[in-house]
Length: 189
Image 1 (cartoon, rainbow, N blue to C red):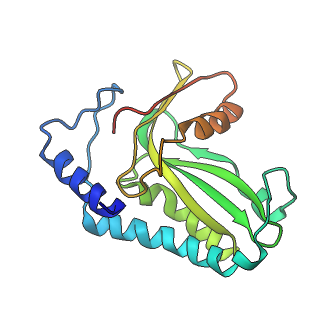
Image 2 (cartoon, rainbow, N blue to C red):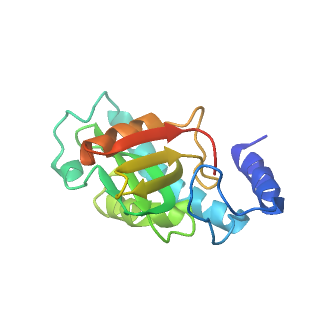
């Protein structure tokens, strides 16, 4: 089935589940359940980043985080909340002028949906004429007292293509929090 149809079926199954407690964290999860309208908004955000990318396809080349891009340098690789469990996304931002790219981890306490954690950065990338792809999302459990960060799960709004890439997110978070134990799991929502 198409990714959105599969995600919609998963949403229906998740909504029928009796518990709103995640097995991988000690924080209770509360808030709205992703619905078709929220998935459509996430899809629109994703398509906005792709529209600019399609326009720049003629100049496609191999860039990288090591390539120079002052526009990308303006974005911190990691912006996450502390001492909570919340939704996060992994974004691949690209500067079409240089073909350089940079991975961005965005997680926000209180974000009801993954799109809410992503939207401020996606809007800023668009305003600066940068392209992006939201590679996927999940949750981050951040515990400063224990100096531990767990990155896990998935997003209905921004599903991973293939296996989750929490490894990329973890490497970036570890750079930001070198004294913390940063672990990942593909399990849980």
